Image 1 (cartoon, rainbow over the protein chains, first blue to last red):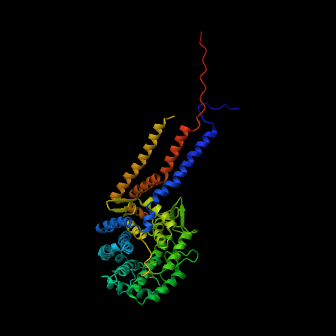
Image 2: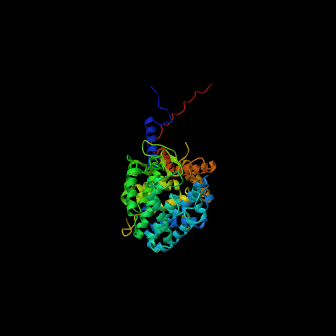
Image 3: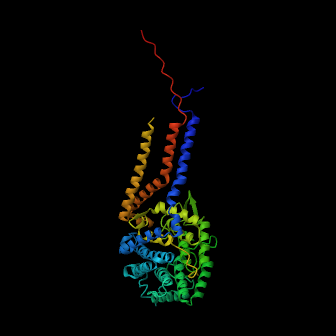
Length: 393
Length: 100
């Protein structure tokens, strides 16, 4: 028989202490982080003016900073050029959305959209697309080079600007680009345009068709049949039959999948399509929720690949860690806000707060780990909204 | 066993150390826009910058997600030691017979 160890607690007391310490540890991890990281989520979801304005002023800082490709240093001049372009594009969409949400900001934010448009039109921003195509996207509008990424995304911003300001000074350019994109789409046997020579991505074509559809609504144009045909083709050919997610890349001649359906393309594509085709965008969002959306301790994470698929991170997805992608997680904020999913929006915002590290300085805020492109994307995603009923599709 | 006061000071010191490192790294990354590179996946990202961002992300993860639990656990253990069942006292030492 063992004697009690003098100066030491009996094992039952020690076990009780361990249980108490473990319970405290788990309680702390399960409650404090989700509260701390999510405390601004409600304000973002509700469109709180002060919260949105701080980020808008942060974006204005980037607009004034005269950015160039060297600010991104991705190691690839094409990717850096895309990020420079994307910074102004997403900033412009964010300014448009906040102008809709807060009519008192309309004049100022329309003028900021003008600055974004001017930047996108500037030679340094156009260069990445010109280098890939060997001709200029704007000067070659009468030609046959598709320029789907530059023209599709840019034209969406132009159409959105025109929706907000029907007598937009960019109306003539918007008409010319829309006509060129519609003509090229009609000539494509797969109803998709090339992003770069030999490369066809359905997500970029979501921006193309959204820009045409939005232009049609503003001008009461004649591209309705083209838009309807594109939507039908997308449903049958470019949405994965098993998951409902958007296929990332297709063959330029046959339209057959060259890559699997992925989270980054689907979440960004549904954001673009929401401007003109709410039911399809919502169906894609539900597919994301069903197949990709996860939650860990109250933090939302979106997978890049559906179950049964796998792959690495790239310039589209950002880093993929344990299957979760930076881009699909951030882009999904827009779907949640547009389609009224406050619960998952809050979970996603917590992870954005945790790893984005928002930091206010003066009247402006930035997401520390995002830089110009991260700030702009989050500005567009956090302020994404349904178009008001009088403007809705 | 350390006194309660010393153990509380130790917990406070750990909190200050983690939060201090977090805020210093945060300010450095923000002022130099280093962290913007984290979104670029692949071999083209400079390894030193990626490492700095990863350290910040890990420190921030520890500070925001794990630290509250760790601190609560330390406080719970401390409270148990102070107010919980006490260990049985050691028996008094035997008197040794005096040598003649």
